[in-house]
Image 1 (cartoon, one colour):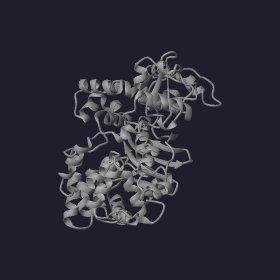
Image 2 (cartoon, rainbow, N blue to C red):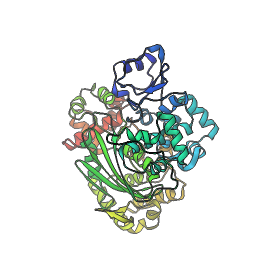
Image 3 (cartoon, rainbow, N blue to C red):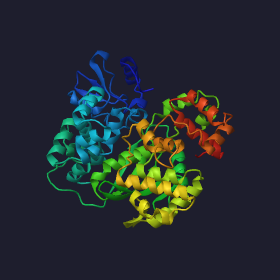
Image 4 (tube, helix red, strand yellow):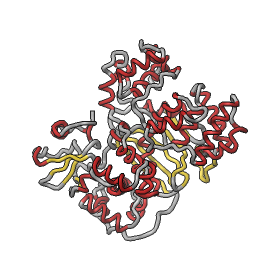
Length: 497
């Protein structure tokens, strides 16, 4: 629905104030010098005065500033960064995860397999902005959200958003929003403007932050929470019908967070070792809950299949649960091969109890960090149970992850990632495709070798043989992963996956 839209299609979305396209692109008005989200309530500008940009950063680079009325950055991200696998999409995922702040443009380029100069050219041509401009826009978005949603000191927010100095923070916010940071904060009801940020230094560790994350509707929150609850590892995770919490090792140190659904937004509450981890955490939570998906477009496509239509009507806005840590997800997939979800959870619980790192300040039942690949490589043979070949395969993969010989991350090219994984001993097609679905958010994979998925196909009157099911899957491309979620759901006979 979003790829390949021409000017007329985009302008029609703006004229009808179609909120489905918020975050997919921005429109800029030449006569005002302002860029907006497609659903901005202001009067629709004349077509001759409009130009469209794929990102707010590109609009700013072209000399426009953000609309103060519709706040074009306070929307879900573009679905394209998950559905596309080209360099631009992979770069956007890594930028959202804070790679530029941690490793610079050179580090981002290296992860993508390009020189920094060539990556600048590629992103400039495709997205209209350089990696630095895209990262700056992402920092500003995080800062604006913190300014209006928290009582954190303005100086702390500067460093939490990833800015290197207070001056850079003040200048960027003023340039993007035509307001100083304190004026942005004053737009929050009950707030008054204060002086600009002037202090220096990093914020104190262990800070708690609460944010509301926008999500495209409809959103099958119950389905995602049920999926996570069925797989929650005690000590590391805690989940129920309407909440999910866990510990997590972020770039600056251990953290824990919880997520609830209020019917319109995901409510995130986090405790961080350093506020600089907030941006990466938000990006990972959004991927975990598939918050940037295009549910209307996906549902419209899948309901055209007669067998799927009743399931789509019963469960609008189904989501593909992602992952907050690529290495952890691969380990969980390996442990879960050829066993039930419940059995995998038992094995993982034993592994976490024995090899997980205890957190210094437990948050209720959250006491442990998921075991690192290095810990499993060293002590896994004494903890893992089952066939020796399976144990050796898991330990071998963890050893290669720990050493860096095997690389895995959200910026991977899907084909390259699959080739690397299936070359490893003990990793087959099911595991590689499952990892691509969860880590990369790959929208178009159907795990025809999965017993539960085939059982769901049988319940819906679809062919259950792997070859026949694969042939059927071509009719629901490019949304086979989401079709598979409906088949998994059907296999349970309940309203949860």
